[in-house]
Every structure is written in structure tokens, then in C-alpha cells.
Image 1 (cartoon, rainbow, N blue to C red):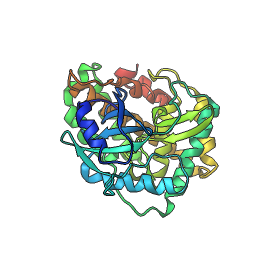
Image 2 (cartoon, rainbow, N blue to C red; image 1 turned 60 degrees about the vertical axis):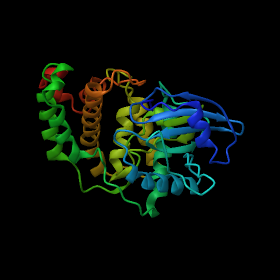
Image 3 (cartoon, helix red, strand yellow; image 1 turned 45 degrees about the horizontal axis):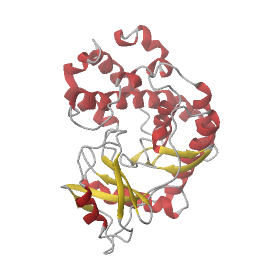
Image 4 (cartoon, rainbow, N blue to C red; image 1 turned 90 degrees about the horizontal axis):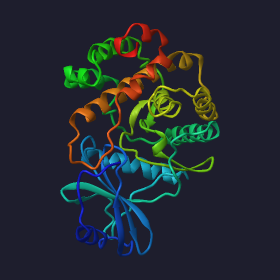
Length: 321
């Protein structure tokens, strides 16, 4: 989440007048994340999240995202559907951007999840995958494995400004991942970005799965691999908590026990997740406007995780030595 587009109190009040949600009391920009402009909105009736879609989120993809959220919410999962206005519309335009008013869910996102919390989160991901078995929407992964090489090329030699030799090292690892990618595994609608800040919790209970704006059709186990890479390391990517990672897999396995084939492919999928977020964070690091109210993420934090998923790389790559 972030604020790229400013919305005045007057414009927001006019926007809310089209809904049955009460009158505007306050609105505060949310600086975390890097994808969209987000505001926490309080009205005389309730609290909501206002999202203005920027950068990688295409207006043409919004019907897919909202249909997925509606499908999951109908199964009882804690996801936040968009609020329709008085005319039944959920997708709007505000300040020249596609925009949605989204139901607020209680709970907090975690900075340092425990194994018990990871167990619950892994279980929630498994339940989500089970719930989409009859979801017929389809969206290609806009940040999937086929996009990583083109993104590496677009970043180019500028990557070496982040760490000397980073471009060549990523290219080396990516060639290896492309050769080993387990494209034959099961596919379904996945979240593709279920970091701790996209899971709301109260104690050890999951109260919200949020921010579905990378959701797509892709390898089911890749979703778990992304989660594993995001949850079981500290924010720098240097310290790995194996107990958290194991708990995620245990919780997920309540719904989908991993086969031998899947266990053999897991390290490649997790290494792919490391490449994906290294590259997207590097692109944002190199291209984020200086005046944006946004927290940039360290690209090397995911690059360092490769030491766990492929220990042999540490001796081969300059940037991991």
C-alpha cells in the first residue's frame, strides 16, 4: 500500500456521497507497500479502505480481482469484498484513477510471526485454494516466471548500482530456474503475494486475507513457496526461521499434503519467488518517484534468501559470497 495520488477531503466526500456508508469523518493515507494509493477512511457508519489503482494494476483486471474476492467471501473466508454504490457499481474513477471502496477487516499484520501464527496462515492459504476449485475466472500471472527475464533486461546494468555484479548473478540463477521450473504441477487461482502484511491476525487467528491485486492463475505450490520465502525470514533476508517455514507447510498440508514430486520442486519454486521479488523491488527502487509517500523495499532482502533455497550458490555468486 502507498500514496501516489492525493485525494482531497472535498473530493472524497463527493465520492462517498454515492454510497450508503455515511458521511466522511476522516481519511489517512497508508504509506506501506508500493503498488497502489490507499487511504483508511472513517465515516459516521464504519471504516473502509479506499484504493486507487496505479502502476501494475490494470483497470481491465479489476473485474477478475473483485469476482475472486466475492467468490472467496461467499465461502466464508475472511476476505474484503468491494462495496457497491447506490447504482450497484463497485469499480469507479477518482482523481483519474480506477478506484474501489473496500470493507475494512479487523486485525493486525505481523512483523515477526510465530510458528503458531504461521500454522494458521498456512491453513488459511490451503482453505483458499480449496475454495477456488469451482472458480472459473482466469488471469495470467503478470509477474510470473515468463516475465522475469524481460524484467531483468529492463533493469539492465542499473542493477549493479544496487550491488556490484548483481545483474550477472541474477542472470546466472534465472537460467538455472528456467531449466528446472516445474510447469507440470497443479494450477489454480492463487494470491501470489501473501506476505505477512497481507494477512490480518488477532492472536493466532487469521481475520483477514487482503491485497489480491497480483492474484492470477498459476502453480498452486508456487503460492506456498512465495509465502514461505516471505514469512520465514527476517526483513533483511539474513536470518531464517525454519520453524515458521515448517509450520506454514504443516498448516497448508491440512488441505493439500505435499507429494514427493512437490517436495522435490519446492526449492526451485521458492528460489523463483526470490528472483521475482528481487527484480520487482529493484525496478521500484530504481524508478520510484522521489516525492511519493511510499516505503521502498530493499531488493537484496529477497536475494539473500537464496542462500537457504540453494546453498551452493553462495560460493558461486559474487553478490552472495
